[in-house]
Image (cartoon, rainbow, N blue to C red):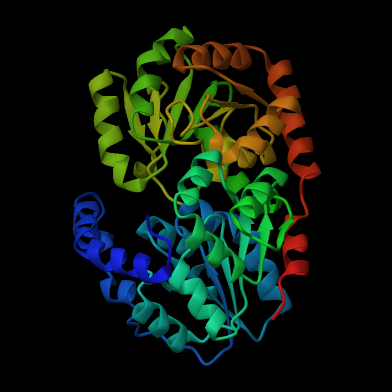
Length: 416
């Protein structure tokens, strides 16, 4: 059992060949994994003279969740620049889509002491904010040694993650104690983190509730809806994961509503071609968003193969299913469709968003289904009952508005 940072570091070095093989393996589907490899070891070309506020957002979900925090920090600290770090190309691409060149960005290095030191010495941030569930012992310790205040914000810890961290209880406890403070999403998250050794966990809520649907995206969604056919029912399957598309396509015929357009937006862009193949093999006529063509009335499925347009997809649909939940992936963000005023469906596996999922169901904004068969049955009911769908959509708007304010509470906690 790994108990100390020294043992943990030895393990990291032992796993280095595996990490490099992992990059090569991921590059088979996503060649961007082979770009900027030196950054993963703390070697950078970029430098800025401005003082930096550093936000670490591993991938897509964390990058999007950080948006309200990024926007308000930019307004409050115009002389500072945001440094956004990622671990995945999809996180990087999401950052480009959301913030363009208004922020600096790079990959956070692996948690080797030397790599971490090079990163911190190169950029010298004034404060660091780790998004959601990022506990890197060497990074945290190096920040503490440099008197760099480092916060874990929008922190969440599922029972599954809690059990994993408990296996390294001594190391986890030492790392959590070296954080300046923790902004937990929910009381359960704060309780689990405190049990692991955190001494300063405050409950601030979920930053995702503070994300406003961009008016440009909603307008784009309305224009898409015109091209779909204004009276045509539209079922969106958002952020689907590996294996879910097959279940959806197999049950889609059970809707018994031939006019329905099924829009599938895979969570990961490297799967776009794979999902296109699944649709082709299903025998359903389909088009791709990337073709940017009018939707033919005979088209049954639209593949949403674009990045940074999720709110437009929500704006264009009548009912939204949120993926990652039919199979045990833990679910994806169901707050966004609520904020867009759409009735929401999700499956049984939502442990990454447990409180938001339970709250949405209790508010009448969402329904939990057991499987793809029940999903299509409930979708058919809502697509045929405009009054019920509207009622759920209005409940979603009220639910999302009632839980706003996390950004302000996080900023009250952060000091430097």
